Structures are given as structure tokens and as C-alpha cells.
Length: 119
Image 1 (cartoon, rainbow, N blue to C red):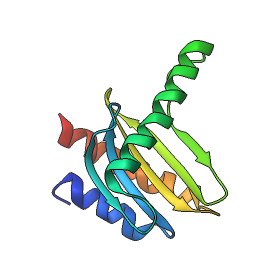
Image 2: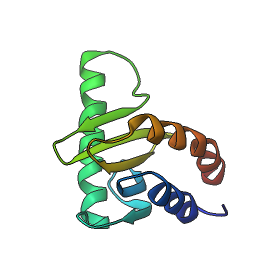
Image 3: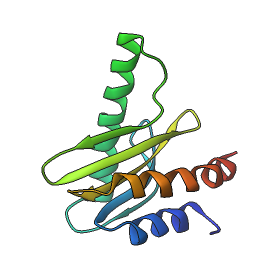
């Protein structure tokens, strides 16, 4: 895999039920995004960044440490994500019931490659 787009495409095609995969800045701007069916790339990136930033603010307010990963589940989608370096995060949205274990495994496998490309 040579670039961000290939990593994201791999995740979106190899995780069952995936509808959105992306590397997104905390500001909501996408680095690379694949979106299917129900979610627009730009809108999805911005709104998922809102979720991510809300979780970070809550962690800071509660003084519970640094966010390592997050999972949000709705009746339609499950979102799993992890921070990438300081200003980005990698997220995968899947139809529920979502296979979070598989998503976590694949995302964790891709993280070192993504971080290396961002340096």
C-alpha cells in the first residue's frame, strides 16, 4: 500500500459492513476517506470529528487521561476510531451489529504505516 487512499480503501473493502473509513483531522478536514451508501465524505468527516472532539473534551474535563480509542454505537452504525499522531484520527463506521474486534485489529495493524507516512 503506497498511500493513505490505499489504506482507507483496504479497510472499507475488507471489513464487513463498512460504510465509511477515513483519516480525518481534528478540524474535520479529511486526509483520505472512502464512503458508501448513507454517508457523504465531507459531512461524515466533519460530524465524526465533532464526536471525536467531544470525547477528547470529556476526557480532559474528567481528568481521566489521554484518549486511546473510541467506540460509538447507534441502532444503525458502529464507529471505531483511534488517534493518529496529535492532530488526526483513523475511523471506521460499520452497519450494526458491527464486528468491532475485526475493525480494531485491522486499524491497529494499519496505524504504524499511517503514522510513518505522516512523518
